[in-house]
Image (cartoon, helix red, strand yellow):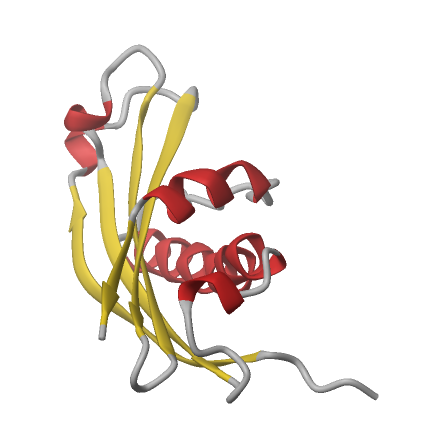
Length: 139
């Protein structure tokens, strides 16, 4: 059996904001802005995404939920450059971390004694390209 080229190490919620007074109805929109930092020396990839939930009639700036989350992935020894990162990593890394964000937001809205906000399962493949375009390399 072939060993995976990366391992999920940890995640953290870095920033979180919630304003229930901005919620108007159930017609919500979601936005995720991914970015990454690849540390070549440590073979570590830090994925960050900024998540926004807002009313479809509004812009993401008038959100009622915003969350900045990071997740760290360790690559195997054969990944020494950004070009060596397998293409499937970008979509998979986001898909691995999204359920943690989903659970966090659900738990917080329940604890706030509001109608629970259950984020839908999503096809996150479309976020691969923006992630690839927003990577910083650390030597």
